Length: 239
Image (cartoon, rainbow, N blue to C red):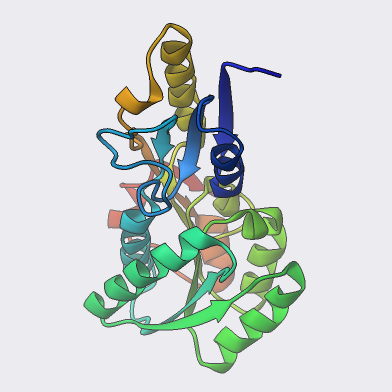
């Protein structure tokens, strides 16, 4: 169709656009690590026909674990849901494990590749005496967000996620970028490219607005008392 710009959301769509053309400008959003994934040469100088907004997930995964430990005192074993078929998770998992070691947390890997594996994965966390759950963001888990949160509550497991939709659906905590703001920033890139800028000259942007959402209603169901020091830092408290 000889379009001027392709806008992509997430890794699979960005990979497809990159493979389809090395001349059409591509503006991506919600990419965990565009350098390690091979989309750009560096954040400062992308170098090719792709640029956009990164979610810096690896750095934030450690922070999510810290917030979880602060919210649920005394936890020592935490399960992590990840998808072995989703490339960003392979990059992020070592960062989560590194953060767990610093916090003296035993991390229990629970790989999930299909929606019908969610129940058995949760059972595995419980069988290993897991006390909480961190879920790495992907289309698989986002598509099953209500089911993930419901199963976790049924097993009495506090949860932490990247996207606020999970906290709104019953997860205990979410901490991550404001996606609406990221999409608006991506639109700025499109505007600049349509006015003559080259993607290779537009640095990849990292999110400037991060949100902490706490679901006190879920905390009550789980029998937890969220520390007041954490509540005052929250951008939103769901009651």
